[in-house]
Image 1: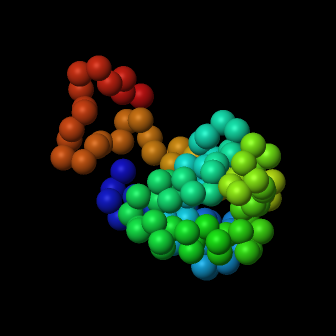
Image 2: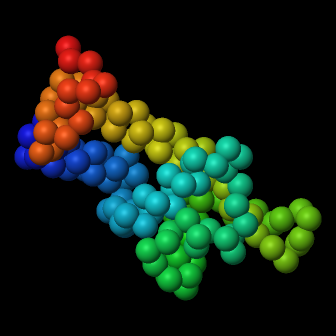
Length: 133
Protein backbone atom coordinates (compact mmCIF):
# COMPACT_ATOMS: atom_id res chain seq x y z
CA UNK A 1 0.00 0.00 0.00
CA UNK A 2 1.41 3.35 -0.93
CA UNK A 3 1.75 6.01 1.74
CA UNK A 4 -0.48 8.40 -0.20
CA UNK A 5 -3.27 5.82 -0.41
CA UNK A 6 -2.88 5.07 3.30
CA UNK A 7 -3.30 8.75 4.17
CA UNK A 8 -6.40 8.86 1.96
CA UNK A 9 -7.84 5.91 3.89
CA UNK A 10 -7.12 7.68 7.18
CA UNK A 11 -8.82 10.81 5.84
CA UNK A 12 -11.88 8.79 4.80
CA UNK A 13 -12.26 7.32 8.27
CA UNK A 14 -11.60 10.71 9.84
CA UNK A 15 -14.36 12.29 7.74
CA UNK A 16 -16.72 9.43 8.59
CA UNK A 17 -16.09 10.02 12.30
CA UNK A 18 -17.33 13.60 11.85
CA UNK A 19 -20.23 12.51 9.65
CA UNK A 20 -21.44 9.79 11.98
CA UNK A 21 -21.22 11.96 15.10
CA UNK A 22 -22.88 14.83 13.27
CA UNK A 23 -21.02 17.68 14.95
CA UNK A 24 -17.51 18.99 14.26
CA UNK A 25 -17.22 19.66 17.98
CA UNK A 26 -16.55 15.94 18.48
CA UNK A 27 -13.87 15.75 15.79
CA UNK A 28 -11.25 16.14 18.53
CA UNK A 29 -9.09 13.03 19.05
CA UNK A 30 -9.74 13.25 22.78
CA UNK A 31 -13.39 12.42 22.10
CA UNK A 32 -12.24 9.52 19.96
CA UNK A 33 -10.19 8.29 22.92
CA UNK A 34 -13.08 8.78 25.34
CA UNK A 35 -15.83 7.20 23.25
CA UNK A 36 -13.88 4.23 21.91
CA UNK A 37 -12.35 3.42 25.29
CA UNK A 38 -15.79 3.60 26.89
CA UNK A 39 -17.12 1.33 24.15
CA UNK A 40 -14.36 -1.21 24.81
CA UNK A 41 -15.46 -1.66 28.42
CA UNK A 42 -18.00 -4.45 28.61
CA UNK A 43 -20.70 -2.75 30.67
CA UNK A 44 -20.00 0.84 29.49
CA UNK A 45 -20.54 2.22 33.04
CA UNK A 46 -18.00 4.63 34.52
CA UNK A 47 -17.69 6.83 37.54
CA UNK A 48 -17.74 10.39 36.29
CA UNK A 49 -14.63 11.19 38.30
CA UNK A 50 -12.66 8.44 36.50
CA UNK A 51 -13.44 9.37 32.89
CA UNK A 52 -10.43 11.67 32.62
CA UNK A 53 -8.26 8.52 32.64
CA UNK A 54 -9.70 7.64 29.24
CA UNK A 55 -8.31 10.89 27.79
CA UNK A 56 -4.62 10.69 28.67
CA UNK A 57 -3.51 13.58 26.46
CA UNK A 58 -5.38 16.33 28.29
CA UNK A 59 -5.58 17.55 31.87
CA UNK A 60 -8.22 16.32 34.28
CA UNK A 61 -9.83 19.75 34.29
CA UNK A 62 -10.12 19.79 30.48
CA UNK A 63 -11.39 16.21 30.46
CA UNK A 64 -14.18 17.19 32.86
CA UNK A 65 -15.23 19.92 30.41
CA UNK A 66 -15.20 17.47 27.50
CA UNK A 67 -17.34 14.98 29.41
CA UNK A 68 -19.83 17.69 30.34
CA UNK A 69 -20.13 18.80 26.72
CA UNK A 70 -20.84 15.20 25.67
CA UNK A 71 -23.49 14.97 28.43
CA UNK A 72 -25.03 18.28 27.34
CA UNK A 73 -25.25 16.97 23.75
CA UNK A 74 -26.89 13.71 24.88
CA UNK A 75 -24.04 11.43 23.84
CA UNK A 76 -23.24 10.49 27.42
CA UNK A 77 -25.89 9.92 30.07
CA UNK A 78 -25.36 10.91 33.70
CA UNK A 79 -26.95 8.81 36.44
CA UNK A 80 -26.86 9.05 40.23
CA UNK A 81 -24.88 6.17 41.66
CA UNK A 82 -27.40 4.11 43.68
CA UNK A 83 -24.62 3.02 46.07
CA UNK A 84 -23.38 6.58 46.67
CA UNK A 85 -25.91 9.33 46.03
CA UNK A 86 -23.12 11.93 45.96
CA UNK A 87 -21.42 10.18 43.06
CA UNK A 88 -22.36 10.16 39.37
CA UNK A 89 -22.09 7.36 36.89
CA UNK A 90 -21.79 7.90 33.17
CA UNK A 91 -22.98 5.61 30.39
CA UNK A 92 -22.96 5.95 26.65
CA UNK A 93 -26.29 6.76 25.07
CA UNK A 94 -27.76 4.04 22.88
CA UNK A 95 -27.32 6.42 19.95
CA UNK A 96 -23.61 6.93 20.70
CA UNK A 97 -23.01 3.16 20.96
CA UNK A 98 -24.70 2.75 17.58
CA UNK A 99 -22.62 5.55 16.06
CA UNK A 100 -19.36 4.13 17.42
CA UNK A 101 -20.23 0.71 16.00
CA UNK A 102 -21.11 2.26 12.62
CA UNK A 103 -17.76 4.03 12.66
CA UNK A 104 -15.88 0.86 13.57
CA UNK A 105 -17.65 -1.17 10.88
CA UNK A 106 -16.92 1.52 8.31
CA UNK A 107 -13.26 1.73 9.35
CA UNK A 108 -12.86 -2.02 9.11
CA UNK A 109 -14.35 -2.01 5.63
CA UNK A 110 -12.04 0.81 4.51
CA UNK A 111 -8.92 -0.87 5.86
CA UNK A 112 -9.87 -4.23 4.39
CA UNK A 113 -8.70 -2.69 1.13
CA UNK A 114 -5.19 -3.49 2.35
CA UNK A 115 -4.02 -6.52 0.45
CA UNK A 116 -2.09 -9.12 2.46
CA UNK A 117 0.43 -9.22 -0.37
CA UNK A 118 0.99 -5.46 -0.36
CA UNK A 119 4.54 -4.54 0.57
CA UNK A 120 5.02 -3.17 4.05
CA UNK A 121 7.01 0.05 4.51
CA UNK A 122 10.73 -0.44 3.90
CA UNK A 123 10.07 -4.08 2.93
CA UNK A 124 9.70 -5.14 6.58
CA UNK A 125 7.78 -8.30 7.37
CA UNK A 126 8.01 -9.75 3.85
CA UNK A 127 9.08 -13.31 3.27
CA UNK A 128 9.48 -15.43 6.40
CA UNK A 129 6.21 -16.48 7.94
CA UNK A 130 4.05 -14.49 5.53
CA UNK A 131 1.79 -16.15 3.03
CA UNK A 132 1.79 -14.47 -0.33
CA UNK A 133 -1.42 -14.55 -2.33
